[in-house]
Image 1 (tube, rainbow, N blue to C red):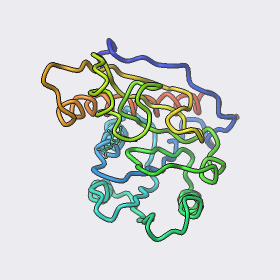
Image 2: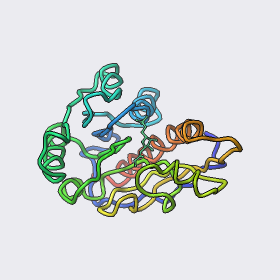
Image 3: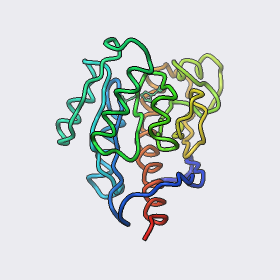
Image 4: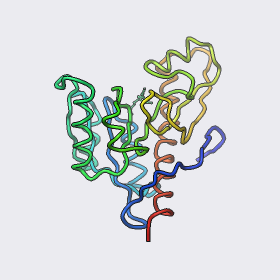
Amino acid sequence: MSESNVLVSPPISSGQGSSAPNAPIKLGVMASGNGSNFEAVAAAIADGRLNAKIQVLIYNNPQAKAVERAKNHGVPAVLLNHREFDSREALDAKVAETLKQYDVDWVIMAGWMRIVTQTLIDAFPGRMINIHPSLLPSFKGIRAIEQALASNVKITGCTVHIVTLEMDSGPILMQAAVPILEGDDADSLHRRIQVQEHRILPAAIALQAAKETVLAPT
Ligand code: GAR
């Protein structure tokens, strides 16, 4: 990995550990769409860069292409369609219950386009990770790439961070910078940001996995 545009924070202590040293950390991935970040995590596991196992994919959109990717990797996929729940809390309660059923340790929001509530955060305190297509704290929320283009900044990028109740505001684990080029539109810029997302999301999870190994109780 070329490190020139990648910035890393020290791992954050979660106060919990996996059951055995060197045991793969057990991931639950949440996705709403294409699932290229799911694919990047699965690829990193397959080629040994990430000592983890994806226990389950949760998706909220019946059309999400991430499902096909999960099938290809032998990962169970569970549809929790937000339209079938009365409130955000009701959806999140079911998401949390499902993640617990699949014995998940760490939750990865890989393009999960729903605002999460305290209900879910309380189920995995300090153990939810999100990828966002900007250099936070700039351009929080939806249409982050369009926001960056409209602001005329020359550099944007992506951020992996711990999820807290305030959207896109939790402790930053890793970031990668991406220059905005003359003639860029949202699609061209997103494509280059995604190249970096696919590097830093597995790398940030691997840092957490390494910390679990080092700090696991003997
Ligand atoms: C990614 O670019 C991710 O940063 C973004 O959704 C995309 C999902 O792509 N997430 C957000 O905007 C969250 N606020 P993918 O489905 O190909 O992984």
